[in-house]
Image (cartoon, rainbow, N blue to C red):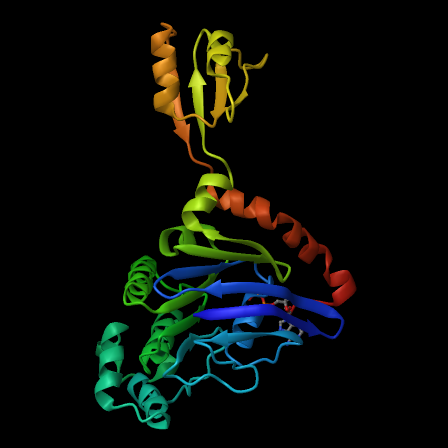
Length: 312
Ligand code: ADP
């Protein structure tokens, strides 16, 4: 379990994370979503005790790490700026981490295997692609068999096979009962990977919701209907909780119905012998819903450099 209480970070007079309150529960993958610059990395660094919050606090498995880094055996972390000695092999990099925590060689071999790196374990890290570097970062995060994982943009640099591997790995880690917090700026990826979403923009909490609820409500699913008797069907469908757009002058035979599913509309049309030319359920584009939610914060960022200097 990870908990954040009014977590706030200011750099000079710029507030990059503001009053974040959220809980990340075990047994689920929680997506930490926000546009670039929203404050995700800063928040993760504070959770891990690598940056001190200006205000507020956080706990991981009940412990506060605001002033000292969380141990490998409690929290596995993958951060964007990794410190890997480029001359070391993947195996030696992991062995050196293992030594500091009394972790046996057999565990190093196991995580190399989990990360799909066994074949390149003896290669120097400086020759690694971005994707291989991400896999090594994941291996390091898993080394101490931690109950909590905090991963910053883990799919960055992975090829499609790697993205699928990461998705399955995160889901299996959560299925084992671990707490998995994974950041991303891609709604579409999180919709496939996460159960829960914590969405931030401009350092503020915008949504804390299940993926299913976000999909159901954010953009609002609708059904597109085409019929030569649009005004009649419009009248028949009207009722509490049902929102109908159309028919308009430009699209006389077209209705956009929210609050009723295609089956219901089809049954009503059939009962009144109204012919249907089209009956298409439309789920809102998740990416669009995410952009709508975070747009204001993105616009702020675009205009911000005039007052706060160039973004880091
Ligand atoms: P994200 O991970 O969501 O892309 P970050 O947490 O990296 O966002 O950054 C949030 C904001 O904080 C950005 O505007 C960034 O420029 C700023 N920032 C991050 N670290 C520092 C720092 N050390 N000093 C000043 N500003 C910083």
